[in-house]
Image (cartoon, rainbow, N blue to C red; front, top):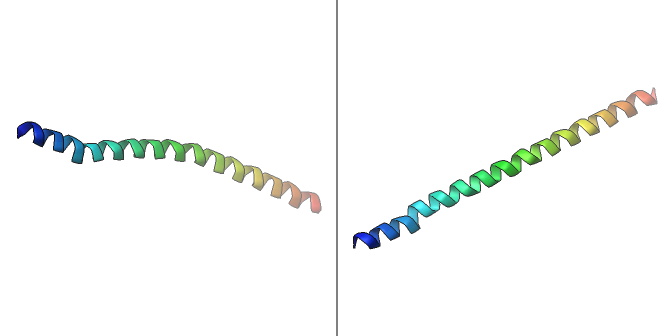
Length: 57
């Protein structure tokens, strides 16, 4: 019964905790990559808008 209980614990709460940690790390690294892209695109669009604004006058 002790072995069964250990297996149930490994497959239940500990497995969920491990999967949650893996998904959190993966999501974090993906979001860090995306924020760089969004910031670069924002700066690029702002620069283009400012150049267009000052070239019109």
